[in-house]
Length: 252
Image (cartoon, rainbow, N blue to C red; front, side):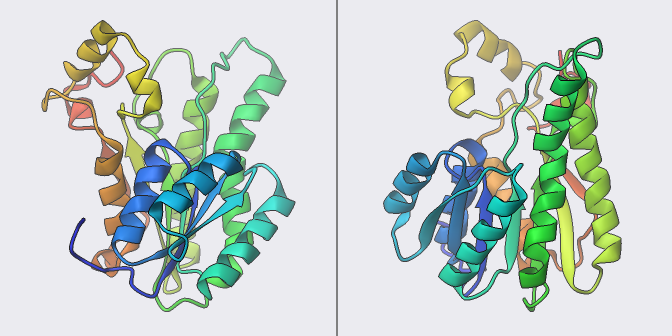
């Protein structure tokens, strides 16, 4: 428990909210007083999280973030649940290999999921967001947007595009909606737990802090950027990687 209620009376729509970073963000926002719409392609997982959080504070919504019609429906459900919409945290995405000598379809699929969905997110939610007195959008990009890694050029291009989109939206929506991005490094999600101990140890050694980042670390950053405490911040990208990238070793 944080002991603060920065989001009392506010409603947040969080995509990819059923697990990992998204679930931590949902818990953080509810802890700080928000009503949260947990949007995820896995409706059962979203429902389980909503039940664990408390039905009055959270609702589960099925959302395939690549489908414009589902975005419209999800936004309508979130607004109906919360009485409006104040925060969009677009977190859904997935890393898959799409090498430069791969197929155009594989490349397009990664861009549609990891960048095109951000366009659909803003298009669907903006009419509701601009009615808020303190609206904020926070995208989950990636350390891939700012530092090179082998084998994932499509994902890196998409996440870098998301950073550029956030900057442009910060200009276009100035005075109405603040738009920022978090760029996590290696995060201790469910996928992290499945790795071999030696792999996890190697990743920890890339950080000056000697550890990987937790979902809660990212959630705290998202909550700050979406809160009134960050009213002077828009168009920015915050790297959350326990310092790995300052050593230039985040991808080693």
